[in-house]
Each structure stands twice: as C-alpha cells, then as structure tokens.
Length: 252
Image 1 (cartoon, rainbow, N blue to C red):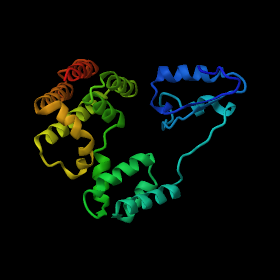
Image 2: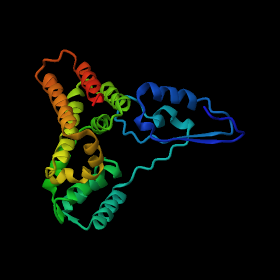
Image 3: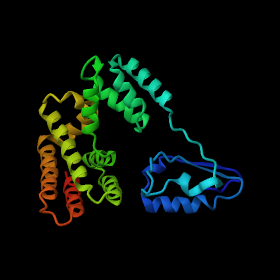
Image 4: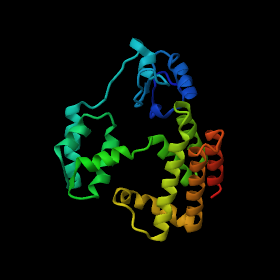
C-alpha cells in the first residue's frame, strides 16, 4: 500500500485478471486509502449477474467514481471498419454487424479479423462463425501459452482461476495445451500451418527452436493423454490430472 507521500495516485491495471482472494485483498485496501490520495482500479472483467467474483464497480456502489469506457455499438462498428481498412480486406455486412453488436473486447475483435484476413480478401460470415465456434475460454489459451513458454507458476494460476469459475475446465485447458504444442511441433517440422494459425508462427518460432521436435511432441502427447483421461472418465479428479500434466510439461 504505497501511499507514503502527502498526495499520490496509484493505478492498478488488469484487475480483471485477479483471482477471487486477491480481489478481496484489493477491496480491503481500497476502503482505507488515506485522505488526499487516489486509487484507480482498471477492472475490465465482464461479470455476468450472479457470477463470481463481483466487479469492483458493484462493490463500490455510489461511494466511488465509476467511468465506463465500454465502446458503444457505433464505436465498435467504426473500429471494425478501420481495422478492415488497415488490413486491406473487406467483410460481408453481417460480419460487421455481428462484431459491432457483440460483447468481445476490441482487442479480441482485432485478433479475430487479423486471423480471418489471412484467408482471403473478403471475410465471410461462415468464416467468422467457424472462428467463433472454435474459440476456447481465453484463460485456457493463457494457461497453454504460459506453460509452453516455461512459466509453470503463471500457467497454474490461470488454470486454478478457471477451475474457480468452472469445475469442468479440465477439457478446455488440456485441449488448449495440446493445440499449443501441436502448433509448435508443426513449426519445428516445417509443416505448413492452417490459415487461421499462421498469424502465431512468428511468435512461436523461437520457442519451437528452443524446444526441438522431441520435446514439442512430448508436450503434445502429455496434453493429449490427459485430455483423453478426463473425457473418458478414467480420471477421478480432472483438476489433479491438469496439475500432473502441468508439472510434467514444466520439465520440458
């Protein structure tokens, strides 16, 4: 709680990524900020009614200044048009309407358009629909990416956070991990990636060189065996399977 000066402004970014215990700790601090000091909490989590954890704006009620920076539908549609123009592609009107009226953050919208732009000069609704249907919980991808990079502690934190919200999270986590190692394995072998995955090649190439083919394949097989154990019901405790796979993958 670094409020030592007479007057100070502290900004806490990415509060939406905090797990429930950490959010409670932050809220305790927020209620005792010394007079004359300001605490700004950037909480971008979309918290649905009845979901946990509760957003800081709901906790604070009228006692705090709340600034809603959520983009309006008009702003979202303008953002889609500008992104398409910067990518040099067009999109069917239904694609623009769907993205403009959706709930995804603008960073995710840009990422989807960047991936779909690799498929051709015009993005169709069928392509967008396929992308939306194959999208996995973002936390699962964050877990997979962190673990493949060797950041086991960060990966486990993402996994536990997802389990806090969804007791059936094991399948999403292990599927994402298998996909991550499969991409790395393909890059090591020089295989041609599917169009929707090519945008990640640049970021994963250094990791692929570091891991090599044997370890990339080992990571894929670990995740796949864990996934099969959970899906077939052989695993009595799916969370334990995820933790064991995480420990084994960390050794790679």
